[in-house]
Image (cartoon, rainbow, N blue to C red; front, side, top):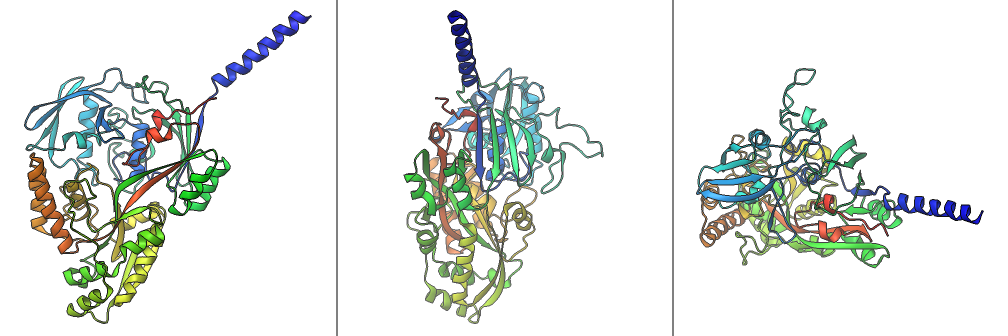
Length: 520
């Protein structure tokens, strides 16, 4: 009898231990918004790139110390001035079960070239040549110093899965901005997670891909449930109550609260995303005058926004390039001066001011709606009356693409970690063919500035390239091409017992595939 009791007890203990040891790990994540589409090349945004790193893999990716590590590429070499050869990882499967080969990389490159948002990044590249099933040559039109930087944006798509037509005859490969395309609703990548459930604005469920190639990763999360929580206090409260395990962003007002809380870790990092306003010269005649643009810049108290709204959690900006970038100019400073701004408005013939419309998101950047309200109030000091509208991110981007207001907010992190990228997308003369100026809602255009960008992108000497980019930055400052506010710092909150601090990065897309949650 005692022996039987011992066996039963031992069996129960073993069963309990087994269920604990092999229990699935589910992670509840709360962001301020969810991805607007499942197409990896529809919208050039942080939400899209976060999704891409969960469901797809790039050729190479950035490390936390901003070096490159191979993902779908195991090695690479520059074989001549305009050719970088990549050796691909073998045995990689897409979620569909199809094998990833060089033809998928080639097909993805061709599709990127059709993307209004992404083709500008790949403008210097002419082709991908397939050498064999596991070797590709990435070709540029001339020597280009940012090949590996750009390769971080080449996420292999499943060419067989995305080829053909839908039941209603639509091309599965088409890129449709803010549309109902096959790629916006269906997904097959090589990444650590598959999307098993998605309800826009409600939740996205990711399940671990059993066939994931990276068996060296110690990541052990089986399921991620991403819930968008727009309101900062609600998002923070959800972490502190244990309803969610990981949040971003953490608002500046709650940094100290999380830092002092038990069972929670606060992770912060300097950021390089510049928050700006653009002035649409096609909609407002006054914005064509540099004096008016300079007056608006002088009317905006950048330091006050950082001190009072951001609670010091940001770096006051006067240019696009942050310190450490090649184009950064140490001597450029914010020029807040309301009296001088009034003088410039009078000199330009607008002493009585004028009225404009303004739009900004209310869940994309930290305190974006509060910042917009502050800027609108500041402009009233120089006679500019602002009709402000703030919108959720999903509704804002279609309005931004339509250039639906006279002044619009845009934040930008350089896709290539390089100064030229800011100009290419935010202030270059808009050109639908090349993708330059894709996010230039101000329609600013300076051919000399564009020529400096082109020259910098062909210059491989670091010092000469920096000089070109600094000349470009100076032009934008002198002409007040846009209104720079600040570089937004980064903050994440996570429950203790996970290596969250090891998976985050300055690019602001955590590598959740490598997240390890303690099972103690």
